[in-house]
Length: 473
Ligand code: ZN
Ligand code: MN
Figure 1: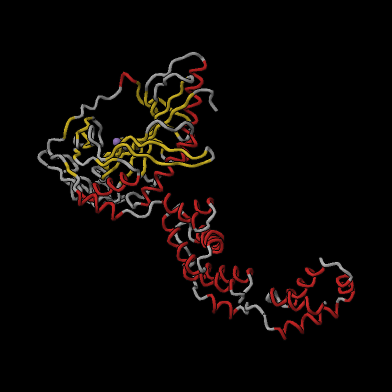
Figure 2 (figure 1 turned 30 degrees about the vertical axis):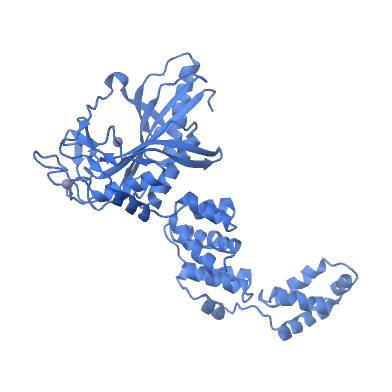
């Protein structure tokens, strides 16, 4: 899309799923009555002192370990000073020169292939409040979000297309959800993304332009594509890119200037005097290791190792819960991967999407494995198995054997009954029998079809084949 060298780096803020805020005991939750979750500390009243939240620190360490970052064992907090109505203290407690994690990376995949994106740093900070710009009432301030813990994950400028940026953001989202440190909801703002983009002729250094306000996954992709086009146009016309910050307007599908370089902030960082340096103990490191689940990329390789196709392994590791479900079905399927995959992806995940709103499985893994077993043993046909499954999905029942009985779906493998039916079919179709005996073997399918029709699809295919072969000679 561009003839120039494109570099993209992302800064992702993730709201941590702690019960309380970063430096006080107020509840950190979304959707409460305005300004109801506040205290002197998070409102920045004089004399109030911050106290760090241990859970938030542990969560940051977990993300650091997962991304292969170095954990800064002697870390500290700093003040980032700026004035804004939703920041009552006049500064944000953040981390400047000693972020809690540094030097990690993350692998991303897509149509562009496989790529490793460096993670420069991950630091802890507190969120600001929320300004609500009304039409008539002016601007209202809600301080409930003030002081909610965040990690800011800063990538290296290693991405070179909107697709890569999108894949990276999705990967961050999967990871923070997988580690249960953030719910990953972009629309509610628990995950927020800013992008730095530069376009320059091959071999030259570009000037990064920042875009803020990217509040949907496809918005990120669109905004970056738009900005690459804009900068390419400037470069093509011999112009110069100037350093600035843009806001993405998702309604109009364009960026607008938020501030130029002249108005750039000087945050006057300095060490937070109300907090001592923080040391990450060996014990905390050990606990974070202990509390870390099998990572999604490790699990993916393990699934491929047991015979799951790579594409299917991607689907099964999209969310941690999928894998837990899959493994239960896999065990119930005699450890036969293709069969378990077929049931989990083809049925369980499909019905989860259709009837569970994509949020929950509507049939338990146990019941899924049971239906798979009924089919594998030949008790019911593949078609009947799907019927049983749909019945469970729609009604919430979890007794497949009973459904089979009620609906009369057992396959008939009783040779006597089958022989009677097949004998009659042979009598009724003398011409086909003659042609078959004359060498037209394709007619075997015709006879199987007739048997299935006569038996309402419940004839055991194996027994049917044997008897047909014998009686037709
Ligand atoms: Zn508070
Ligand atoms: Mn930040």
